[in-house]
Length: 351
Image 1 (tube, helix red, strand yellow):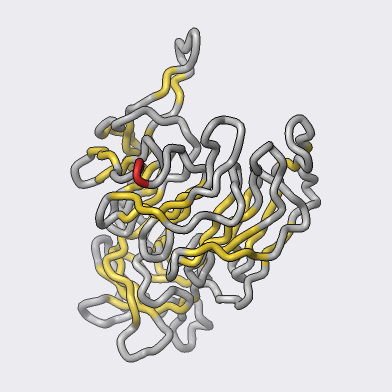
Image 2 (cartoon, rainbow, N blue to C red):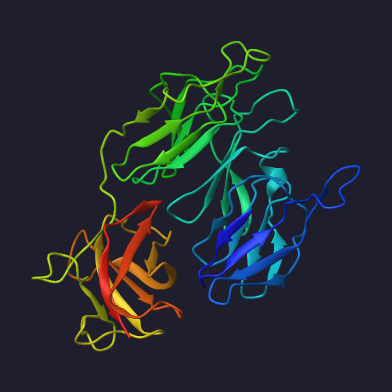
């Protein structure tokens, strides 16, 4: 598993060692860091328990990394290079859940799972990074395994499909509302499926593709046709992030300025590595703690601040540091990523 850290390096942890693996592959506890600036790998602290699960790691708002969602859940601290175990799991469930989703408040929703190798679970819990523990939340409306959970722009999570107890594929869906910790039934999918993908689009819709379908359970599994993709349409659409351009530039030159001098990072005053730049954007969520990402010249920039733009209701301010190693130029491309949705591209001048 791999995840980009706030400093632009990539944490790579766990997996299987397929070299000299007789009679079976070794599960790794080792971890290392990849530095795209130097193109080198360096070791970091070992995981507290081995893992080869395909659970998605999450970069938490405090810069730490959450890995897993069950008995082997752990958190990596880039400042110390150490992994530590999460707490409170046995007060929530005794299984490894199948799906994890980071919510806008920085907590992680974990759902479903296969408690005995034969079934599915209605289990749901929430990991609180501030306290370092899991706590219970409401149960789902249907037991699920091999399902998907997708964060929506309004802060709710869409739970779709999966395998039911007995092996049949689910066509049902539900919405988790973190405001009250409840799951509400949503419209059914057209095709019941599990092992599929669910991707949030810039339109706010969710694209559901692929997977397998078993109307009556094992051994009736059949691949879902590639033509059987479908879209979930939320009650209200929320536009993706948007960046603004300087007047007269046809929105090509970004309205992005030096945080100290107030001058735009244009040909007249290009910014340099290490400089702190500011910009306004639309399409973020007020009060959220999940940070956006800024991609400048193909490199991830460190976000220093994000929040409501002072005096401009409905707009948001993002401050970031120009990373080292970005090629100079008068039109270096910049985009913002939020909830996996990309903004339009603008340019800044770098020397």
